Length: 560
Image (cartoon, rainbow, N blue to C red; front, top):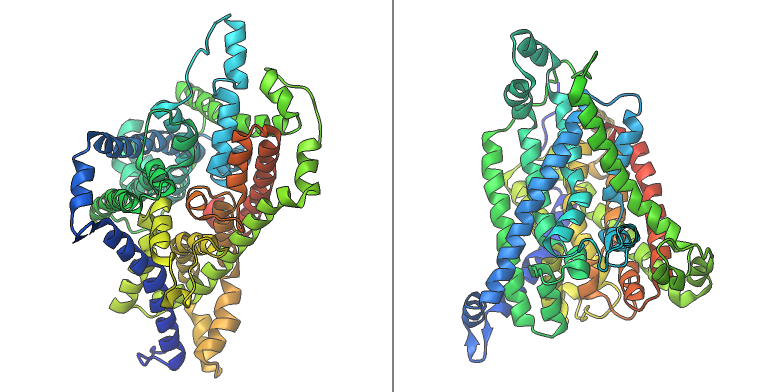
């Protein structure tokens, strides 16, 4: 029989709640308040003049329309591909299932800016594939234009379908195979089985994926910035407004982008509550289809092979080109001036190596700070349920609804001058503002990951510790943390992967002393040091794939 939990809040819990409230107010709530206030500043005081001027401008409205369109199309394309791949891996995948699964998860491990640059090297106006087709077909101009909405959507689909794929793949494990067999024995076709048996189970996973994918689509910056052409979206316009020191306009754009993201999230959450599925008791696990699977299997295999080719091609090309000189890359369709000079330039020159070290340091700082905040908090939220904890969790998860550019502008408006939350120091232009931004966006992911780990913990271990005389702190340190360590580390590694090549917040917040590798990749590309830029990319890809292996080792239940 479980011992009844005491409702009395000890001094340690009270102190921790005070720390959390300080952090939530200082780095999430107050910064957003500063941004909203900045958007209301007029020449004579406060008002809606900036908002009215913004919404009366047809060009600005077109930017908003483009942003929403990009988010919606991202959901459609990523949803189709992600769900189809999850169904294939569950019902049709054969002997290479594990390898295929790892390859299909690979895009989430490659920073977006590196993906965009690799695609430009393949499909851009001077890209390998583009030039090869132009030469073979004897065309005077490139056979296609890899830019604008189509190019951006292609990149987003390539990188973001993973949300749908992974969530639906996990949800399919809760489909009852006996229900499928019963439906088939009664003459139901596979489309009917999907509609009546499979879809109700995976629908919550699909809806949660819609939120994440839409938010990623509307906040995408790398692809619109590097290959958008005339297709403008809010994320790029926010950076441009900040660069021109038009902070009132940037704040309005941030507010609009935030409202778009939150509106979609609330709508999806409303529908999600209507379609919750109890997955506590899993039925008979689904089995791969056996026997002759006909045209469905053949077509699915072709599609999956094509997807894997799309995944591997940019990686292979960026590695291949990184061992060529910049002049060869720019002048030849298939450069073959092989050299190590790009890598030697990075590791032999401290100034060139510094951005990589900066990114590693800032990402590790964000992981460490995020874990310190979320590990004890997730334990308290899961084990001591209450309305206050619900509010606490809602506020900590708020950055999940904020695109990266929103978080960055909020911090700029809040910490351009000293405040109690920065202990009197102005943080903008300093080293720590970028890892702070990384931490703000990492907290929701880590909190969610750690809650899953805590929920899987046997309550008897905690009760046994207390019965032996251990206090709450001792129980947490000696029992809770060691037993959920693998889940904690897996979440930390995932955050590290997402931040080590982060571009959007970095472009808005970096300074002389904390220039990250993502900025150096783009800058070297723009300054025609293409070889060094690609070598940077290969190094980051290598780091991310090592981290991917660690995740698979630590958290097989969720990722394998």
